Amino acid sequence: MKDKNVILLGPPASGKGTQARQLAGYLGVPCLGTGKLLRDEIERETAVGLEAKGYIEGGSYVPDAVILAMVESWLGENVDGWLMDGFPRTIPQAEALQESAIPPSRVIVLDVPRGDLELRITRRRECTGCGVTFAVDHLDEVICPDCKTPTLVSRADDALDSFKVRYENYEELTVPLFDYYEGLGMLDRVDGTQSPDEVFAEILKLVGG
Ligand code: AMP
Picture (cartoon, rainbow, N blue to C red):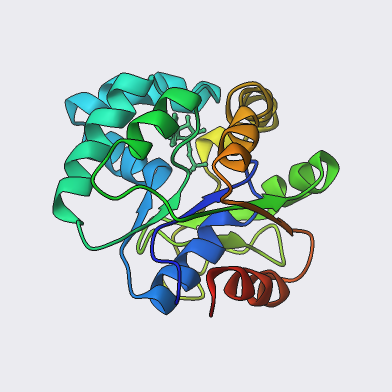
């Protein structure tokens, strides 16, 4: 039996987004990327977007209450299973998900050392056309490999200063989730320094693929 409700955890630029897209397709479930959802809210200048903007650009976590309201409304429309990329990131968020109609069945951590993450951050680009995030081979690349429009940009929160804050938040607020999910018997770890295909193959073994 394949796991249906999977959480991917990992530090910024550990490859969660890339793996999440692929895994959601494989499992046939919708993927919730809270970071992507927040960036859309900012772009549309909604009340949530205006509140979240300062936190995100400085590298801080957005307050739990804002995230939980957003996730609750998304979960209400996706009741048949899901994949989580970037949620939960704090113990209160994990506890709220545990009490929801569909709690997680498996939690997979992508382990990547900090030095590798800083290198990856400088190569990460987002397509403002189709929203896909990936690593470029050349720092001046602007054409999206997926939708082919010349709209690749660096994310504002990928500046090195913001990255440092994001990493510190990850260690302080998200790493405690490892013990939380270990205690529930659903935590697995994957070496995220391998190639994306190798990481995906390991994830598939874990989810019963
Ligand atoms: P991501 O695209 O997952 O790297 O998220 C980008 C940014 O959005 C993070 O650095 C946080 O500022 C914010 N964010 C995304 N998801 C959450 C969450 N579950 N809790 C708090 N902040 C979040």
